Length: 195
Image 1 (cartoon, helix red, strand yellow):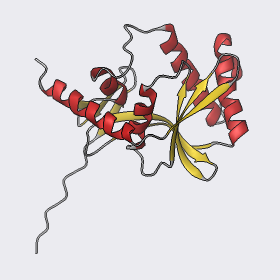
Image 2: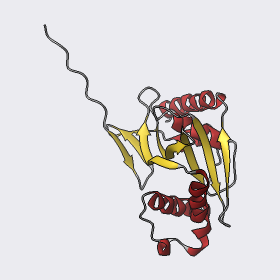
Image 3: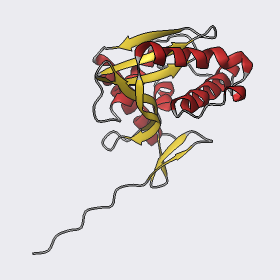
């Protein structure tokens, strides 16, 4: 009896500078690209101050989670945002298990970077770190990320504020996944028909 060897798994890569995801060298859309392409999220031209703040704060929060943050490396105007994340962890006991985790979906063919998955009150929680104002599409974003991990009991966004405070917004609408998958279908269609 002969067996057919299993097909090799595609090689998943992430280009951090371009923030693009690839399978075997072919680009697949990321979550943010999907939401922009489908017209569901804000579209910003160029690299804004808010984007720079977000990148810097995310990096500092990652180092904080890894117990490797040198506070002197945090830009003074953005220390409050990082302090807000530290306060969130202290207040809630949130323990991250995945930090800035890149993954892709085998069936739906998209990639994403989850900010955090961790344990909170005995539940597996997916948390997205934000330094701006709440927007409706953030729930679609966390829904998309939740499909990239095995088990998530709750989804939420943590809105960090300059004054060191934070706000948590839970995302519990089951329709969020369907809306994201609709946006993904539109994105794949547009990419297939681009000239």
